[in-house]
Length: 228
Image (tube, helix red, strand yellow):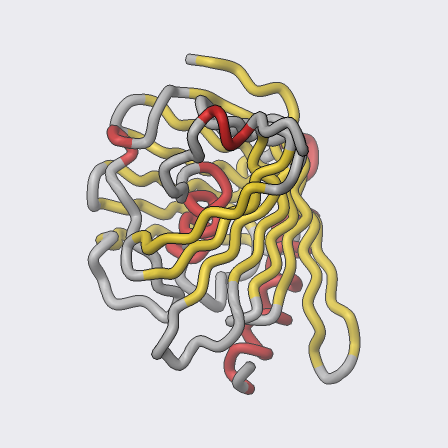
C-alpha cells in the first residue's frame, strides 16, 4: 500500500468518526459522473438495472492503521435503491442527516451538511455499496448449489474489467474477491457475507469488506430490509 493510500485510510476513519459525532459545520455539494477518472476503479451501473427496490439501515465500523496505530470510526447510514436512483444517507447523532450521495444513471450528486470535508471522492463510498449489494457473477446452477456432499462451490469470472472469485456455501454467497491483474492495485477487495445473499436476492444481514488497495476494513450490519 502506498503512503498516499495509508493516509487516505486513516483520514477515512477519522472523517467517519467526525460525521458520526456531528462535529464541525459543512454545506458542500458536488456533482460527478460515474465515468470520471477515479483512484478507486469500479464500473457503476445504472441503478435501474440493479434488481428489485429496497431500503435498509446500516451500522458501519471502519478500521485502518496510521503510523502503526489503529484508527477507528463508526457511522449509521441508510441505503435505498428505488427505480433509477440509488441513495446513501449518512446519519449523525439523533439521526441528523450528515450527507447524501445519490446516483441517477451516470450522475452522482453529493451533499454534505455536517462534519469535516471528505479527503476522498464520495464516489468511493458508492463503490463499496455497489460491491456489497450488486457486483455479482451469474449464480451457480441449482444442482451445484445443493450438492449432497455440501462442498463449497467456487465460481471464477471476469466482471467489468476485474477478476472475481465467489464462494458459495449451503446455497448462499459466502464471499467474493475482486482483483485487477496487471494494474498498480495489489491485493484484492475481499467481502464476506452473512446470511441472506442468495441467487435470487442479496440482502445479507452483515458483511465484512477488507480493502487491500487502500488499507481499511468495513464491518457492516444491515437491519430492517424493506421492499419498495
